[in-house]
Structures are given as C-alpha cells and as structure tokens.
Length: 79
Image (cartoon, rainbow, N blue to C red; front, side):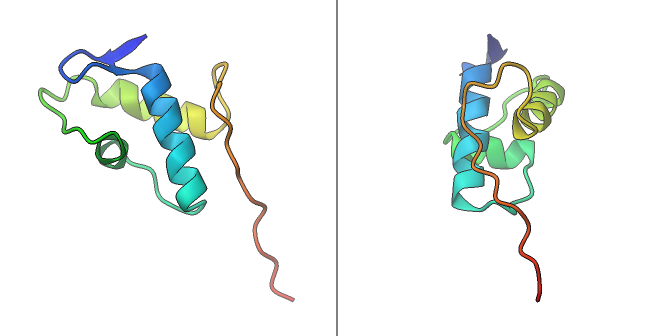
C-alpha cells in the first residue's frame, strides 16, 4: 500500500525502516522524521505523517501481518 504519494513510500518501506532502525539500535525512539531519514527522504505536504506514525507503532509491536523481522532484545538486568 502506498503511504506517502509525494515520496512514493509504501507500508513495506515503513516496515523495513523500522526493522533496520531496531537492528541498529534496539532502544531508539522511533519518530516519523527518523523513518523518513532512514529512507533518505523528506516529508513534503505532511498529510501522510499520521498514517506513517500509526504504521510505525504497529510494525514496531510486530503488528499487521508484519513481514519484516524485528530483532527485539530483552531488557538487560542489573545484577
């Protein structure tokens, strides 16, 4: 599904960006701007930001038929 028609970003692009960002840093705070930067793009009109936010959160939680793997690590215990 096309999420951003200005930049031709698909829901799969968002899923892959979330996966790549989590692989690089499991504790990173995800934002739509970070997703855009990961994809090498910039928001144009901004009407897609609510949908990108929704997808980003959903994919980060292993959401809607997420095809991208999410290498979450368990929290480190202080002993």
